[in-house]
Each structure stands twice: as C-alpha cells, then as structure tokens.
Image (cartoon, rainbow, N blue to C red; front, top):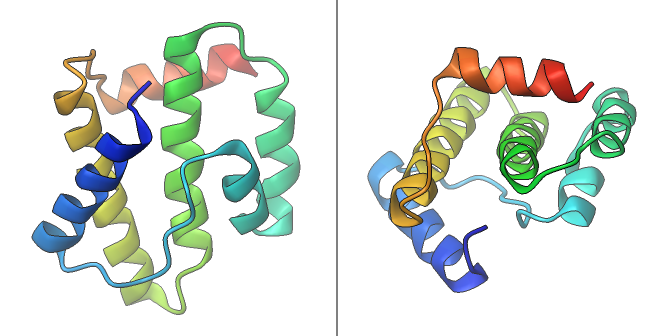
Length: 115
C-alpha cells in the first residue's frame, strides 16, 4: 500500500491535473465508510469483511474511495469531476508504487470474487 505522504502527493498532482476542487475523504476504512451514502455503507462494510489479501484490499479501497467522492458531489458535473479526479489519483498511486495496474474488468472481477 502507498505510504500516506505518497498518497498526499498523488492527490495533489491529480487535483492539479484534473482541476478537481471538491471534498476528498482520506483513503482509510473509517473515512470512506463515513463519507458514503447510507445505501452504499452497508455494502462497503459487508465487502470489507470478505477481504483476504493486500492486493484485493487496495482494489477495495480504490473502488470505495471513488464511490465516497461521487456520493459527496453536489450535482452531476461535480460527480463527473470527482470520478475523473479519483481515476487519475488511483492511476498515479499505482504507477508511483510500481504496483500492478488492473483493467476495469479485472477490478470488477476481483470485487465480485470478494463478495
């Protein structure tokens, strides 16, 4: 997992490149859970209980952090900007960590396997 200082740098870069200026919960279980709409929160905690390895946990955090950003958008334009920002931040994190990058189909398969 990326160190907090690296994550802050990634988010700063993503903000500059995407122009996103909306709310941004920390990329932690507690912050993401608190930022999600109630109808998403139950699914988040249910999925959390099924995780067994580090790679799946990173995918889990990336997915739900993006959802938390989208849930806090004030309108459709802000939601699209939040999702663009999240996609960029997650991509930059993966690249900075020299970690594996996944296609959307691979991410969806991992999430499906975890539930």
